[in-house]
Amino acid sequence: MDAHKPSPSAGERLKELRVRLGLATRDVEEKSQQIAEDKHSREYYLSHAWVTDIENGKFTPSIYKFYTLSAIYQRRITELLSYFGLQIGDLSRYRTSIGVPKTHLLDSGADIDIDIEKVSLPVRFKLEFRLEKTSLLARIVEKWDEIPVGFLQHLDLRKSVYGYIGLEDYTLFPLIRPGSLVQIDASQRKISAEKWKTEFDRPIYFVELRNGYVCSWCQVDRGQLIVIPHPHSHQDVRRFDYPSQAEIVGRVTGVAMQIVGEKVPGAAESPGGSAR
Picture 1 (tube, rainbow, N blue to C red):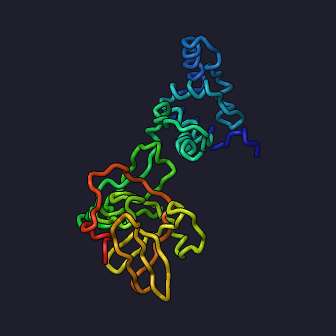
Picture 2 (picture 1 turned 60 degrees about the horizontal axis):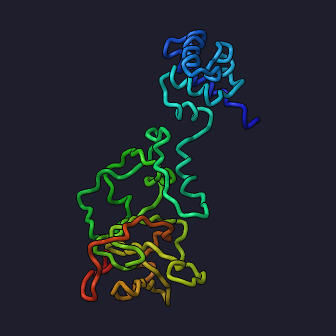
């Protein structure tokens, strides 16, 4: 199929909008003439024959004609573009994933109708949720809602596995701070044997214990899972029978956290992970 040829369903959806508004193709032509005259450009004009051809899937409108259709059909231009396979919301994902050489501020996305592009975020937590304890996000969220956050377009928190690092969990401090959200790849549930050069390269795992969770570096030695804290965390190395007492949820692949906090763990404080 020609990549530039629109899907017939796109034209059908435009026709459905037109009919629902009680407009004939000549009505669209007349109203587009008004816009073209106001803009002093014929690019905005749509003849009734062009409207019919677009609805029959013969042509894709130009950006100027999309503008006109958006005004006449009273729909956001991003919605009309999506009929033809152009998902404006994907721009946010590409903006964050495509690297450029120079450090720069990220655009807020306010230049596009991002309010129709939404992600699912937790808006209500279960009563038993405690900020102090590390836990899987899916098990502590009571209600999800659609939130228009363009920067988070690449996330789908309801389908992916995410963990919350408890406010009392300093296991990997300062690498991963209490209160952070971590992204977990549940397909990576075996301890990696890959060699690492620095602590930033060392694999991190989210582990379910009998009565809680912990996020840490791990090793397996003679049937035991060794939970290894960061040297600056002032936490002890812990051992659990594996897999009877500890199960690997997955490998941590991303983290969202604040880098300025009010509290720094001392040698005699912070009990570490959510369970001992």
